[in-house]
Image (spheres, rainbow, N blue to C red):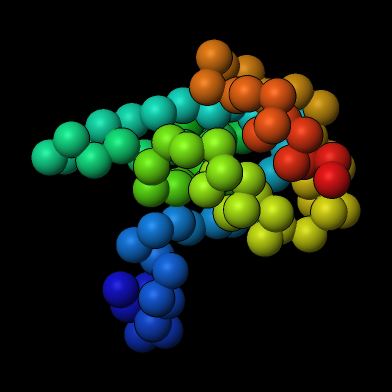
Length: 99
């Protein structure tokens, strides 16, 4: 996949992460985009759906894969998170923000 300025990002089909959008209150949800493909979206609730809302888009719904992507974000950014809302936010995923 080619992103802004023609830079090729091989991982973009599996995940996209925007650490600069992390805030204190996040939401996590599963979305079926097409052909039964499930994606997990991590969003900043402060963004209210506007620019700066998406923290991560991750292909699939397995906790292990979500945690791997979250841990690519520097710990100092992850420590900003105070709450993650939604049923999909398992204890393992929540713990990934502080480890």
